[in-house]
Amino acid sequence: MKYTLIKNANIVTDGITTFGDLLIEGATISAIGTDLKAPENTEILDAKGSYLLPGAIDDQVHFREPGLTHKANIETESRAAIAGGITSFIEMPNTIPQATNQEELEKKFETAKNTSYANYSFMFGGTNDNLEELLKTDPKKVAGIKLFLGSSTGNMLVDDEDVLRKIFSSTDMVISVHCEDEATIKANLQQHIEQYGEAIPIEKHPIIRSEEACYLSSSKAIELAKETGARLHIFHLSTAKETALFRNDIPLKDKKITAEVCVHHLNFNDEDYAKKGTLIKWNPAVKSKTDQEGLWKALLDDRIDVIATDHAPHTWEEKQQVYTKAPSGGPLVQHAFPAMINAHKVGKISLEKIVEKMCHNPAILFDIKNRGYIRKGYFADLVLVDMDKAWTATKENTLYKCGWTPFEGTEFKASITHTFVNGNLMFENGKFDDNTKGERLEFNR
Image 1 (cartoon, rainbow, N blue to C red):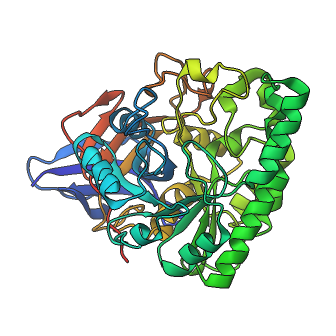
Image 2: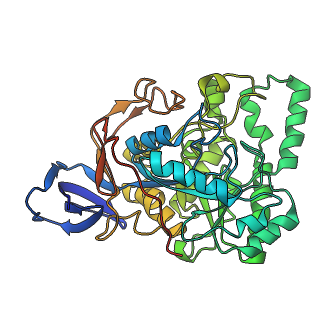
Image 3: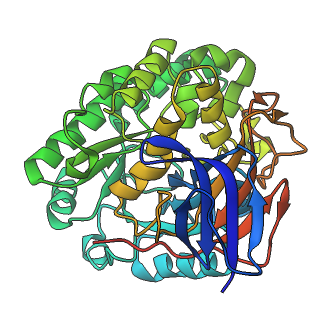
C-alpha cells in the first residue's frame, strides 16, 4: 500500500478551514488531524501553510471527442483540467457522433478509461425522438441527461413540447438543460443580418441571444419541472432576471430545481467585447455588468448552487471568423479555479464558498460517490494552492489543445502547485505523471 502524508496545510472543507495534516492510504484519505504518524516508507509532503482543497468537480465540459478532435480531446483537456485543480468532469453529449444512444455513450467511457487523467462521467443526450434509448441510461453509472432547449454545437435541439413533457415525466435522473428560446434568437439574428450582413459587431451578441430568450426558456423549463416533478438543473445562467426563479430557503439536497453559473459569466461582461471580441463569444452570451453583478449576488446567497466552466474549445482560426461564422465557446478548465481564487483575494467570495460551489455542491447535486470533500474514507482528490505565488496566463503556459485562453495576460494571484487524483500525485509544479489515469465516477442512486 502506498502512503502519502501532507503536513502543515490549511485544510478547507465542510465550510471551515483548519490547520493540520492529512494521510493518504492508496486511493483514499485515511486520517486528518495534527501531528499524524505514518507508516515507514511514507512519502512526506510539507505544505508549508499552503491551502489544501478538494479537487473541483466540473459538471459541464465539452472535450470534443469523438469527431471534433482538431479542437480538443479527452487526453489534452483532462490534462489541462488537472493543472487547474479540476479532478473530475462531466462531459456533454454533442460530439460527432452524438451520445444519444447507449452504444455511443459507452464508447466515450471506453476512450476516457484509456486517456483521461481526471475522473470522468458523461451525460446522455436527449433528442426529439430517442426517449426509449434515454430510459436505458443506468443512473448508477451515468451522470445525467442533457437537453438543449436552445441550439448549440451539434443538432440536438429539443423543441417538441410533448417530447419534453414525456422526458421530464419519465426519469428520476438529473435533467440538465441549456435554456435559450430558439424562435426569439432566430428573429433577433435575422434583424441583425438585415442591418449588418454577416459581419455583425460582436457587441450585438447579447442582444441577439437576449435576456428575453434566456428567461422565456428557463421559466418554461421550471414550470414544466414543477408540473411533472422532474429533477431539473439549469446550466450556465447568464442574466440577473433568471436568478429570481430559484430558491435559497432549503438545503441543496432537498432542491428539485437547481442552477449553475459559469466562470466566464462571473468574470466578463459586455464591456469586454471591445478587447476580447469573439474570444468571449459564448452561448448564452456574456451580458451586461448588471447581469454579472446579479449572478454574483445569487451565487453568494445560494440561489445559484454550482460554479462550472462550460469548457468548449475552438481553434484560434475558427474564432477569428466574422460573427455569423465564429463558433461560440471557449477553453476554461485550466484557469477556472485560479480565476475564482482571484475573486477571493479581492474579497468577493470566501475560499470556503468557492469550495462549496465547485467541489461540495456538484457532488451533492449529482450524487457522486465519495468525492468533493476532504473526509476520511473519501477519494484523495486534492489540490494544494500556494496563495502567495502569482503567475500570468500566456500562450506558452496554456495547456489546451487549441492553444489560447480568454484569460491571456491575466495575473493570477495564487498557484496550484500539486494535484492528487485518487491518491496519485498527478501534477507537481508544472510536471505531470502521465502514467496514471482517472476513474469512472460512480453515483449513489
